[in-house]
Length: 267
Ligand code: 6PG
Image (tube, rainbow, N blue to C red; front, top):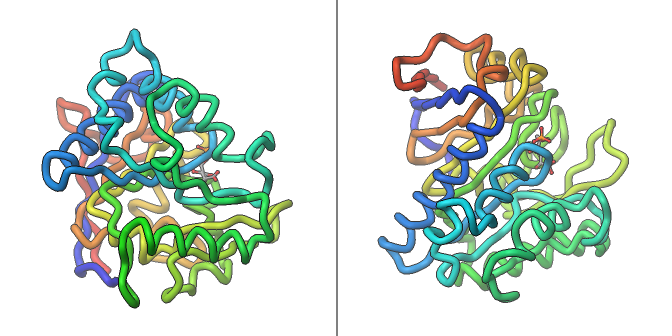
């Protein structure tokens, strides 16, 4: 689904990674609460990697304010992508989420929509696509509309498992595809970028000085989505949010007194 020609990018800069995790936990709870208030359910797709783990741990922590505010009973959890490994493998996004979050919160198994990384990648992609179609009750060529998609940014400009120059960048009809990239030791299963863009809300979590240069390129450099697949993320709402720490935001234009900056991009 092609969004409009203009994209408003809002970025929030936190002092450090711990503050980033707190803002992310707050954002998860706020967006889930809004979705439940509007339609009785919240369907959120999360990414793997290292950055979101601290936010998941905060959501799971009974001594923090977010666990009791999350509408767990009305939440369905999905993954943006998964590595082609078993769910107990050290690289599994599901395993990271289970250890940081799922083992500690009251989500029932039917609320957890795992990508079956243990299967042949094409089979895993097909089964996840079928799970999306049935759980979103999609007819025909419909696309699932997540209430929130949480993404990360790789230091090569990838997001989800949409890697530079990968075949997966050109997949426009399937909801889920297999992604292979030269530097990857395992295939990955990923939502396609049109599905991500159909979400009501999309945010990136980006932390650390090693992401500063690529983040600047993605946000302020010329459009080159083959080389910088994160630039494909252009939500149909016309708004995209980045939650950053100071180190990652070091090369971006300064923020206002509230630690918030806004950039506009034209197609
Ligand atoms: C994954 C993610 C991937 C991740 C980025 C950033 O499966 O690893 O989907 O896109 O978000 O690589 O990862 P970090 O948060 O570890 O920097």
